[in-house]
Length: 214
Image (cartoon, rainbow, N blue to C red; front, top):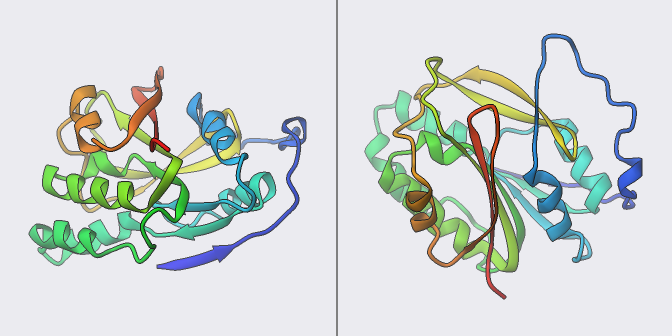
């Protein structure tokens, strides 16, 4: 549970990693929602960002350079792994209810990634409740949701190449994806948020951008 502060001047869109090079063995996929997520945050000076994945140094640098933001990295995937390995998965919903120390309405943007796909329904609902609580009015939440059940059991680090491309870097998981959620089930998890944009990608991921009404 850590705080990474990164303050840097904003760059114009044309300055974003124009010469990014990608290793041959990196899986890179387009993202349609990331740019829109960034746009939601640029209206605030030094916005606060909550990242639910593991620390990825290049992502911290990217958001610092683009937004001059304060980043809280809260690796909930590691929390899930620990509960699975200790045989305490039934305690995860209560843990998530108390997991985030951020005050209500204090976060401008949340990167949920595909975390909810790995949670059972009670844990997913507790997480959604807490994320809705800490999100500031007019704030944005970006989530990824699988539309097909993969055979491999792994998590994915989403490494930002630029505002329209992400590297997908698998790493070991103690628990695979749970039941695929339909659109209506995803929306029901966040009754206090509204869907701003939704994109179905060719790699079987649905990107959903939620906004909290002002």
